[in-house]
Amino acid sequence: MVEPWPAGKKLAGRFSRAGEGTWGGMGVVYRATDDSHAGRAVAVKFLWPRDSEAALRGYRAPTSRELRRFDRECEMHRRFGGQGVPAFVHADLSPPRPYLVTEYVDGEDLHAFLTRNRPTLSAAACVVVPLLEVLGRVHGAGVVHRDVKPANVLLARRDGVVYLTDFGIALPQDPTATRYTNGRTPGTIGYMAPEIHRGERNPGPEADLYGVACIAFQMVTGRLVFEAGHSDYDLARLHCEERPPLLSDDIPTLPSGIVDITDRMLAKSPTDRPPLELALEIWRPLLPSPGDPAPRPGFDPDPTLPHRAAHTTAAPPAAASPASVRRPRVHRRPVGGPTRSALRNLCAEAEIEVERGEPGAAVDELTAMLVRAEQCLPGAVREVQGARLIVARAQLLRGETAAAGRTYRDVARRLADAQAGTETGELRVRAQLGAVQVMAAEGSPVQAVADDWRELTEGLTFWPGPGPSHQIMELCREVGVEVEELALDARPGEVSPGLPETIHKLLARLNSQLDEPRRN
Image (cartoon, rainbow, N blue to C red; front, side):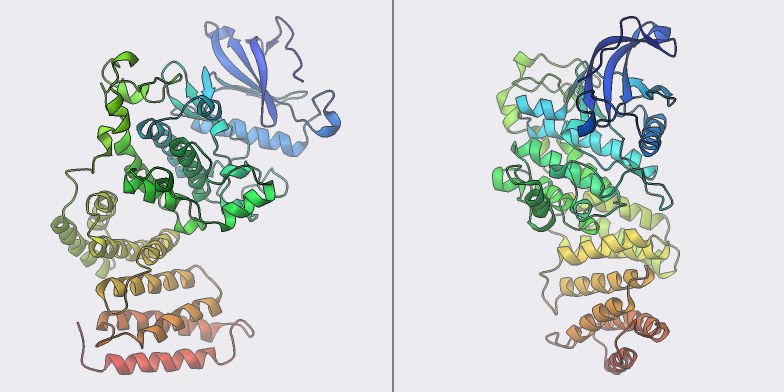
């Protein structure tokens, strides 16, 4: 259905056809030559929308919305071209057929690659890590890709470099940004985050992280997170409601860190997914090192090549050792990371900054240390999660409310099974109370904020032994005072009758308990 590019025809006097076209999204892409740059190869994408009525002729004139969407795609390549995104060369949005010219990546997409190859865990990391790095740069500029899937990941044949393509439905996170897609957010069902399936019109960066997790799961296990034999409706329902399988269900010998981070990236709620930086820190140790042997059997394209050949010439495929593929050296637990003593000392410094209301260098250093501490100190749950609560308090002080909320909720989830009356149980309650503070700061419904605080306060009444510590009771009272103010200021009908009085009675009980002899 692709109309031929007439022989010798040029665009803007410099681009001439050099290959057949292939369909991609709302357009068709040609390989062409840039005659003004020694005939270098470029990719030319025409905005060439199709619909059922135009199936016979394969083309209809783009709407004004489609033109604006294509203009945004061109702008994305201007901003992000290079470093894992095909570089912008030229664009012309004038009728009758607007087009975008980018660098040409000679290779194949990840979907085609996976039909012929089953990557090792190390090879999978060679795709996941650069993909996360590109998304980190895109997210840092306030943009969400919204369609992360194997077909939009290119592997260069010459050097194995990974590229993220097709920014046709990318959207700035700026709430004032105009959407140029109709109805529900488009995307590919098997890789779309649950919030997109549910109709979220402005998904955050966490949605892209979910797509990366789906890709990682497919590369490691050879199958989709949820199999595509279901109808589109059933597949969407599975992504929204069904707990995803663990990587270890298929491969029990996988490193626990990879199993855990992939599972967290597949969380149903975007607030439960880990920071992109943490995912990078856990996947990076699986990358091959310069001089490592090539995979055997070899790959074409070979995504391990940029990492194996960064400083030395890669070894030929025939020299590869099968054992090195089955048990990669990088599976070993990281060494040289932070110790418990170093973590405790830095926590003490960071807590002083937080108590002063001036989070600074110690907090920043603790935040960076925690990424490695979670890997290197798997038995130090109390110390690590306590440190994360210090960071969350600092985030609140800095006005980073969303980040604080993610941290509090993640700590509470990780400590969900902690017993009442234990130190880890108190950490869980601190995290839950912090989450209530975030809800209040974000303007959540007052009734929901009050219900969560009331449930936590009443639960402390039934703690075993001498009961909760003085510090927990003080924090509970501090949050309760905020909740009481919200309830008193609530509009008629916004909260249940008698809620302020209920909160007042609970605060009176807390005050009475705090007047009793302290348990430190």
